[in-house]
Image (cartoon, rainbow, N blue to C red; front, side, top):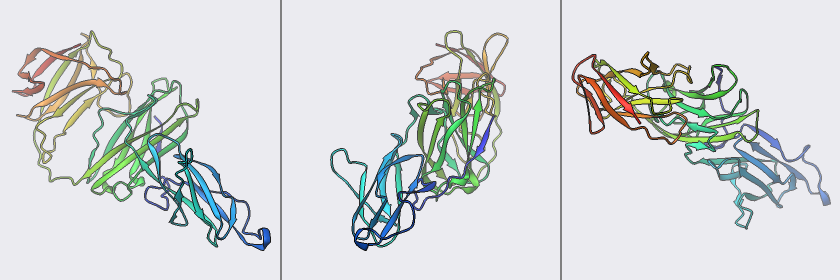
Length: 356
């Protein structure tokens, strides 16, 4: 597994994703036609948008322009600024990305403010894990967002962008990206974003992830999700029961299958998790909880149960594939499954589901 820590350079504005500056003009200010002094224009670049034509240099009081186009559907240009002042956006047909300003008597730096739209997947190449929990608590430790890729034999990436849209809620230095590879090491199949809970503050922000394969330019995607940060409540310890749940998978595909238990009577003041998710052991090896296959070809998991609580049981696919898996309980010992809710009457109980 490869691990990369990212610290995305903060831009001049809170949502600007600038990581470098490119000069639209060469050289220092010089005398223009008629002896008028000219000034250069420099643009903040980013891998989330493209810079088209722009004024290279101009004298004070003349019209100047820059064309800024989003690189992805999940990205929008909120505003463009010259030396901190807003450029005017053209309303002409075919000019929706054309911005103008009047050249001041000084060199100009163009900065771009971005806006983002939550996007679960991008052309099936890049997708958030459908089992992600998007509420993060302040405190210690880490929270995680998982994602999957479907890029053939991609083992290297040429573009890697990871950022938070609101640095006051989750700063970029609280984010750490890691990748998961297939067992043969030839392909990146997904990964996780770890969020350092000690660095976050209450509020909402969007996590933006853009990746492009080095193998094929068309493998290029950007996904976005909103993360809510809440204060960690005062926690009380609760003893849990370890319960066994089996699944009979004879009529369903098991590749990339995940199983999730969600506490429908969850109490945030208890130190028991709201969700417990188990993944395909043949696909994941990055520290996630995994289900196992026993000698009878039954999928087996053991989860921690809070006495008296009711849990939903979800079976799906971590790559976002739209498949429905229906459950029917068969054998059970000290367990009850009614109205799509699972409960146990004793520690060490068990239940088996058939899947279809």
